[in-house]
Amino acid sequence: MSETTQQHNARCVVKTWADNNHTGAWGTAAHERSPSWLILRAAEAQTEVSRTADRCADALLVEGFLPGHAEVRTLRGIASTAAQAANRLNQWADALAEAEMEMP
Image (cartoon, rainbow, N blue to C red; front, side, top):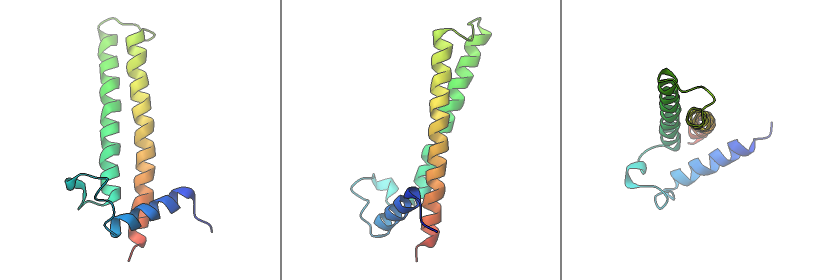
């Protein structure tokens, strides 16, 4: 079975990390973390942005805004974009975790 582009990229990232060639692109706190751990933190942050934007839109509805109001639509758009980002990041973290398990 041939590897996907995401699997290939994940292996390259994990190898770069293992070779300690990542320190110029990341802050000091990230140097001792695994790539998958870091990306999971980013996914969690995007999930929180999504939830917060949805809660804010819901609060506007309670105040009498209609669902089609520009501010409500903007907040729902932010929530949707952040949720999509969280999904992509979770998939990327999974690929990185698989590659990490393959490393000797």
